Amino acid sequence: MPIPGFSHSPLATALGALLAQAEALGSDALLAFSPVKLVLFVAWVYGCLYVVKWVGESGLAPVRYLPALRVVSLFVGPLVALALMISESSRAQGQGGPLAQFFRQVSKSFNKALGRDQAEGENEPKLQLFDSLGTDLQEIYGHGQKADKHVLNLTVQMIDNALAQRASDILIDPKDQNAYAIRLRIDGTLRTVREIPADTCRAVINSVKAVSNMDIAERRRPQDGAFTAVKGDTRYSFRVASAGALNGEKLSIRVLNRNADRFTLADAGIPDRQRAVIIEAVNKPSGMVLICGPTGSGKTTTLYSMLNQIDRRTHNVITVEDPIEAHLPNASQLEINPKADITFAKALRSILRQDPDVIVVGEIRDEETAEIALRAAQTGHLVLATIHCDSNATALIRLLDLGVSPILMSTGLNLVMSQRLMRRLCKACRKPAQFSPRIVQKFRQKGIDPSNIYEAGGCDQCGWTGYFGRTAICDILVITDELRAEIAHNEQIANKLRTEGEKSGRSTMRLEAMARVVAGITSLEELKRVVG
Figure 1 (cartoon, one colour):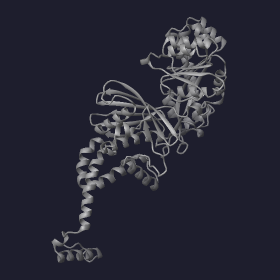
Figure 2 (cartoon, one colour):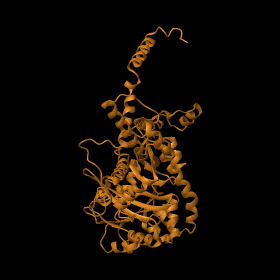
Figure 3 (cartoon, one colour):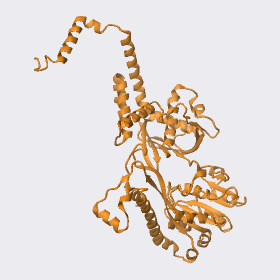
Figure 4 (tube, one colour):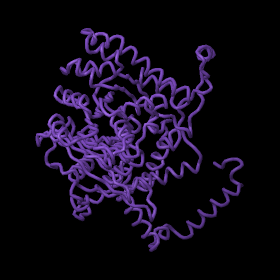
């Protein structure tokens, strides 16, 4: 039945002419052999077979969909590859962006699929991984075999990508029996960057263990190792830890501090008034400066920043660390090794016989280490140390709980400092925070201009998180003569510190955090996350 208005249209005329030509040629002509058709057909089949293999190795497809995608890829492989890359680019874009940005993300996804997540120019140096003896990963694990080439590319790509994104940790965890998740800790928060099939990821884990001088065959017992990486003129150090988990082996890679000799207290975000107090304590010839905070609060970075205030060419600086996280020029650095019976306490005793001016204790863990360090602080040495505690008050309580004498503690300590790290708002995408009229009125009553308060946005520069970098907030307790007397002679000092000291510490930390919010450095949401 003819469609009204269509039978006499140009489109209908063209279709009719094509059908008439096909009938005239016959069906055999449509199937006639042609070299061009054969080449296109072979290329399509080859492309489909390659995509079937690539879908599982690229990490772009969710593992639960792999079986179905492999079947579909047998017939329309190139279309599946294009769809996965577009999906990855859209995910990476977050809320979207200009068309040029979209195509840039597609390009990144294509590079990622080929095992080079960071697009490398012709003259850009490549990342190389080495073990403690300087042997390249290719020689240790690859042996030049084709089957291992993709695994090595994935390993190098994973490390390179983490360095490019300023990650402090790389976590490789089994999600289930079929897949592993690779997560990066960036600015203190974890982000899942990709999922990899279990078989492929086990090979990646083995390659990392091989370059870290760990036993590849041992998958249950915890192991520790280390390796280095070189890219151009820059050298990086990594610490590796493995452990057996429910669905397979998990791996943690810590990116150790870089450029420690360039760390400054100002770069950490410590304000001038607090910085002056810290520098005064560090410039004293003796006494202990104790830094406390939870794991990941930047204690070691602050420790190195304090050491950079000291002229190490005219002072004998000796550090005891577990492990050594960064190289410090003009300082003697000792690493703890329990297997060789080298502990903090034994290392400190040895150091005291080496005429030190400044002693650095990476962490006070037991009574013996605490007493030796405090006695050294009493006898003309400057001691910088860290301890795992939440606040200044709990640091003093911790020393008392370890069995340190109150008199020894009061005479050895000069300054106690607790700190936290808050994420900085990305300057490229931060936006003014919106408040209700009632909240605005409360801010104004307290003398706060709400127009200076910002909230997180999201852009390509910050990975769509709204934050880029971190700043430190500190609570500093100077041990005055009055406080020394109170610590030494007040038997109830521990209870007093638990109540008044902790309350005061939380209040100071909150005020410091609020000062960063009002200055537009961080957000109210980040304040709540860090200090509650």
